[in-house]
Length: 244
Image (cartoon, rainbow, N blue to C red; front, side, top):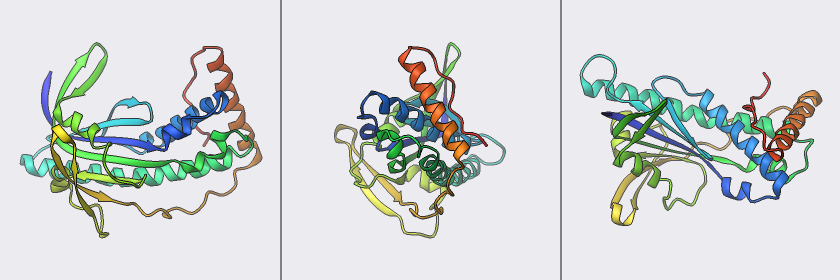
């Protein structure tokens, strides 16, 4: 068990609860679509980010802030800037795969497939101290700053797509770009007040995906139906990775 300085990142898919409130067939298709979108985000990540765990519609990452050479503050700034660059790329990776899915799932008329373009991405970034521990073959992170990162998802923002940075993180990373940041004071009751900075990524950063060829749409539909049958039979399913 070790105490380490780290950047704590939570990636959460907005609209998950409504997306999953569908009849049984649609729910299983929705589960596969959510998994595929999370895989697209995870594939866009690299060192120093480490995927710690999946939490339903969310992924918890961390990046050790004190690795490398040089003064500690310089190491923390370098790692924070690297992490911020990756977080901004997550939005494009998510949108790109979502737009592909809209086309690939067009042969299926279930609620999940027809609404696959309505999902969005929320990202929380905080820097603090984590408890890094090994539980059998699993590596876990814990501590007050991990709890705070999760609490920040329950904020007062009304939009469903944003990058939320705490004072501790942005002091090291710098701002995410030339655009204006919205500074807010979020109140978490007994947990106190937290000053945060919100970046709203441009919604039209990517053009619509070109229509998927018929063979790809047919293959995607078969994969969704195969997942549905396996889940109904209680069998484990394999990761749903899209074709190159």
